[in-house]
Image (cartoon, rainbow, N blue to C red; front, side, top):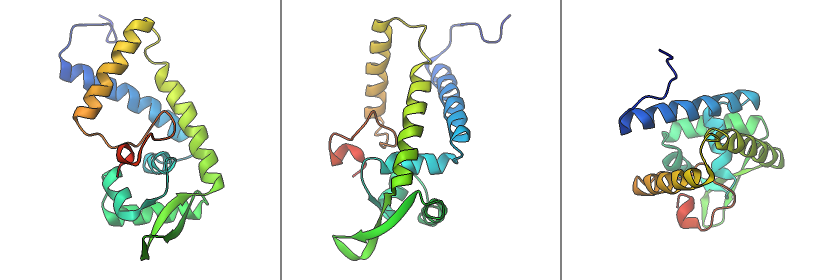
Length: 160
Protein backbone atom coordinates (compact mmCIF):
# COMPACT_ATOMS: atom_id res chain seq x y z
CA UNK A 1 0.00 0.00 0.00
CA UNK A 2 1.28 3.46 -0.90
CA UNK A 3 2.40 5.18 2.32
CA UNK A 4 1.15 8.49 0.88
CA UNK A 5 -2.28 7.21 -0.14
CA UNK A 6 -5.31 9.11 1.09
CA UNK A 7 -6.71 7.19 4.02
CA UNK A 8 -9.35 8.02 6.57
CA UNK A 9 -7.80 9.73 9.59
CA UNK A 10 -8.86 11.59 12.69
CA UNK A 11 -8.66 15.34 13.21
CA UNK A 12 -5.47 15.15 15.28
CA UNK A 13 -3.66 13.02 12.73
CA UNK A 14 -4.82 15.19 9.83
CA UNK A 15 -3.65 18.39 11.54
CA UNK A 16 -0.30 16.91 12.60
CA UNK A 17 0.36 15.62 9.08
CA UNK A 18 -0.64 19.01 7.64
CA UNK A 19 1.72 20.75 10.07
CA UNK A 20 4.49 18.37 8.99
CA UNK A 21 3.82 19.26 5.35
CA UNK A 22 3.80 23.02 5.97
CA UNK A 23 6.92 22.76 8.19
CA UNK A 24 8.77 20.99 5.36
CA UNK A 25 7.90 23.76 2.89
CA UNK A 26 8.87 26.42 5.46
CA UNK A 27 12.19 24.63 6.14
CA UNK A 28 12.94 24.58 2.41
CA UNK A 29 12.29 28.33 2.19
CA UNK A 30 14.44 29.03 5.25
CA UNK A 31 17.37 27.15 3.67
CA UNK A 32 16.83 28.82 0.29
CA UNK A 33 17.06 32.28 1.89
CA UNK A 34 20.00 31.36 4.19
CA UNK A 35 18.00 31.98 7.37
CA UNK A 36 17.26 30.02 10.50
CA UNK A 37 13.62 29.41 11.40
CA UNK A 38 13.74 31.93 14.30
CA UNK A 39 15.38 34.53 12.04
CA UNK A 40 12.67 34.05 9.41
CA UNK A 41 9.94 34.33 12.03
CA UNK A 42 11.52 37.50 13.44
CA UNK A 43 11.71 39.12 10.02
CA UNK A 44 8.10 38.24 9.24
CA UNK A 45 6.87 39.62 12.57
CA UNK A 46 8.80 42.85 12.04
CA UNK A 47 7.25 43.36 8.59
CA UNK A 48 4.23 44.90 10.34
CA UNK A 49 6.11 47.36 12.56
CA UNK A 50 8.96 47.65 15.07
CA UNK A 51 8.54 45.65 18.29
CA UNK A 52 9.98 45.93 21.77
CA UNK A 53 12.00 43.02 23.11
CA UNK A 54 9.29 41.88 25.53
CA UNK A 55 6.70 41.95 22.73
CA UNK A 56 8.98 39.93 20.48
CA UNK A 57 9.63 37.33 23.18
CA UNK A 58 5.90 36.98 23.81
CA UNK A 59 4.92 36.89 20.13
CA UNK A 60 7.59 34.36 19.15
CA UNK A 61 7.26 32.31 22.34
CA UNK A 62 10.94 32.66 23.22
CA UNK A 63 12.77 33.55 26.41
CA UNK A 64 14.07 37.11 26.64
CA UNK A 65 17.67 35.83 26.56
CA UNK A 66 16.92 33.91 23.33
CA UNK A 67 15.42 37.04 21.76
CA UNK A 68 18.52 39.05 22.64
CA UNK A 69 20.79 36.55 20.90
CA UNK A 70 18.48 36.31 17.91
CA UNK A 71 18.36 40.10 17.51
CA UNK A 72 22.15 40.31 17.92
CA UNK A 73 22.72 37.74 15.16
CA UNK A 74 20.25 39.49 12.82
CA UNK A 75 21.80 42.86 13.62
CA UNK A 76 25.25 41.51 12.65
CA UNK A 77 23.77 40.51 9.27
CA UNK A 78 22.31 44.05 8.88
CA UNK A 79 18.76 42.66 8.84
CA UNK A 80 17.48 44.54 11.91
CA UNK A 81 18.43 47.61 13.92
CA UNK A 82 17.70 48.78 17.42
CA UNK A 83 15.98 52.15 17.69
CA UNK A 84 14.92 54.26 20.64
CA UNK A 85 11.42 53.59 21.96
CA UNK A 86 9.58 56.92 21.85
CA UNK A 87 7.37 55.81 24.76
CA UNK A 88 10.22 54.74 27.06
CA UNK A 89 13.62 56.42 26.96
CA UNK A 90 15.25 53.41 28.64
CA UNK A 91 13.98 50.86 26.13
CA UNK A 92 14.47 50.20 22.47
CA UNK A 93 12.50 48.62 19.66
CA UNK A 94 13.71 46.30 16.94
CA UNK A 95 13.01 47.31 13.33
CA UNK A 96 13.93 45.95 9.93
CA UNK A 97 16.76 47.57 8.00
CA UNK A 98 16.29 48.15 4.27
CA UNK A 99 18.19 44.90 3.62
CA UNK A 100 16.06 43.06 6.20
CA UNK A 101 12.81 44.45 4.77
CA UNK A 102 13.76 43.32 1.26
CA UNK A 103 14.74 39.84 2.48
CA UNK A 104 11.58 39.59 4.58
CA UNK A 105 9.40 40.54 1.60
CA UNK A 106 11.13 38.06 -0.70
CA UNK A 107 11.02 35.26 1.90
CA UNK A 108 7.38 35.99 2.76
CA UNK A 109 6.25 36.05 -0.87
CA UNK A 110 8.10 32.86 -1.84
CA UNK A 111 6.99 30.96 1.26
CA UNK A 112 3.38 32.11 1.03
CA UNK A 113 3.24 31.00 -2.60
CA UNK A 114 4.86 27.62 -1.89
CA UNK A 115 2.42 26.89 0.94
CA UNK A 116 -0.55 28.20 -1.08
CA UNK A 117 0.36 25.71 -3.82
CA UNK A 118 -0.07 22.74 -1.44
CA UNK A 119 -3.87 22.39 -1.82
CA UNK A 120 -3.94 22.87 -5.61
CA UNK A 121 -5.80 19.55 -5.88
CA UNK A 122 -8.81 21.18 -4.21
CA UNK A 123 -11.47 23.10 -6.08
CA UNK A 124 -11.75 26.86 -5.59
CA UNK A 125 -14.75 26.30 -3.33
CA UNK A 126 -12.92 23.69 -1.26
CA UNK A 127 -9.91 26.01 -0.87
CA UNK A 128 -12.21 28.84 0.30
CA UNK A 129 -13.83 26.50 2.82
CA UNK A 130 -10.41 25.35 4.04
CA UNK A 131 -9.22 28.94 4.51
CA UNK A 132 -12.38 29.82 6.45
CA UNK A 133 -12.06 26.80 8.74
CA UNK A 134 -8.35 27.33 9.37
CA UNK A 135 -8.94 31.02 10.07
CA UNK A 136 -11.46 30.04 12.75
CA UNK A 137 -9.07 27.48 14.30
CA UNK A 138 -6.32 30.12 14.39
CA UNK A 139 -8.59 32.75 15.94
CA UNK A 140 -10.09 30.34 18.48
CA UNK A 141 -6.60 29.36 19.63
CA UNK A 142 -5.21 32.92 19.75
CA UNK A 143 -2.27 32.13 17.47
CA UNK A 144 0.13 35.10 17.41
CA UNK A 145 0.52 36.91 14.11
CA UNK A 146 3.90 35.78 12.82
CA UNK A 147 2.95 35.53 9.17
CA UNK A 148 0.35 37.61 7.34
CA UNK A 149 -1.01 38.20 3.86
CA UNK A 150 0.35 41.75 3.97
CA UNK A 151 0.07 44.70 6.26
CA UNK A 152 -1.65 44.06 9.56
CA UNK A 153 -5.14 45.61 9.66
CA UNK A 154 -4.71 46.83 13.24
CA UNK A 155 -2.19 46.83 16.04
CA UNK A 156 -4.51 44.55 18.05
CA UNK A 157 -4.23 41.71 15.54
CA UNK A 158 -0.49 42.14 15.14
CA UNK A 159 0.50 40.87 18.54
CA UNK A 160 -0.19 43.84 20.80
